[in-house]
Image (cartoon, rainbow, N blue to C red; front, side):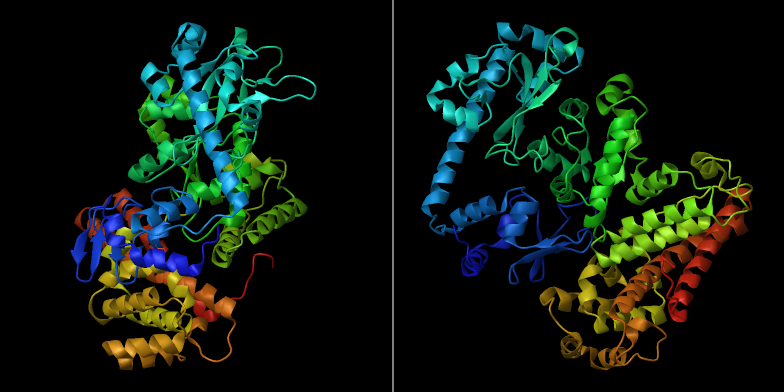
Length: 628
């Protein structure tokens, strides 16, 4: 099947985007557009806009952006080709003809889906019949209710080499082998793959059974050295490295909870769902793969990884962290939930209840902290050579990040932490890495991670307090480097509420970028002038006198200019929130002096000085690098 650009353009043209999105989101008309609270993240005020004329939706809060096809894949969870098929059917368009081989493949896949559905139904019948007594006792011991077991389609495979084969004989041995339900050995008759096991169906994003996981049942849950859990092999329907268990059920729950939780196994997912955490998924017997991490990011910007508290679980967590690093993008990361040693999520919710698990979810560890803490504790750091080794490992990890902006942020963050860790008084070289972490070097304070940046809501509230000179420089930089507008769309969207000319100018720059993301500087200036910003636009483009690399014309180091612009935007957004908090703390000290209020005032003063220092570094053109 060949989906030409012309066909896809016709499909988009025939699809009324507001009508499509309005089926699941309550839209309100706002001029020529529609607006709503964003379906991709929790919010109380609308920042999600749908434009039928331009054929796209955009959220100024979380940055979600796309057309009708993207809506079907990201919000409905459909594979690309299935999304196109559904839209084409609704629009009355015939799909392009399939070639003969593609048609045969589709027909074979249809038969495999039907065979897997019939197998799931047969296993379920066995669980709730006389044969499933022992399997039901296993569920009872694990605290899994009959209602939950039925909701997840759980079943039982009798300890027989041919019962399933006989029940599904109408499909033929060849198809059942291809589906992974039978094992074929040369010179022997095919026989049932799953025997004497509690069966757990694995479904795709559309809820179709594509594979099974089987938990062994018997004395001490062990028989003749067989694995405790057995998955279906890879088949035309099932690729375990690309599949997440419970994805079909978790998608809607994740949108509602604004988070997704990745745990290690089936039973953890099922136990969490029973406890009210329907947004949990699990890999299938392997560490999280890059494909699975990408799938998690389609559900949440910062998925929560909650692996077992034992050493194996923590090793799996750091493997996932290392695999995620090269894939990071602005706003997209991972966070880690640390369970008590020796416990898994299933144990925790059964022993301590859902509230205890919810409390742990509120104390997540950011990806950068997990990487840093692991590397610092990996080897002794009491000698110059060992510290150089730590510095190199951190630098190599950061350099593996593909996105230039995130890579530079990690290099800078690791540099700050490294300098802070070894800036104290001389260390006791006999102390191990954990002791040095506790002491921060003899006589030195323990390093503390910085507080998270202000939320989008706080930035929006404080937008009216922007430094006009810095804001003018940032606007000049965005016009000089228009490709950076899309990278900072969330931040810029929050600045639309700034009062006066600044707010209107930020809004105009956003609108220009949304309409045409391929514009150059001259094109942006032309459009701004047509919108009534003729004098301002020209002045900004001629802002060479401002002491920043990103405002200068002529030949410049574009990488350096982008990095400096990123830093300037971060400082510009942080300053108003810090200033507002400092004013509030100062008023509290004046009204009623307490040690706590004074400490907060001092801390905020230090933050304000740090921001000023960061801005001064931009003006001083510090070219330092983590590898120096």
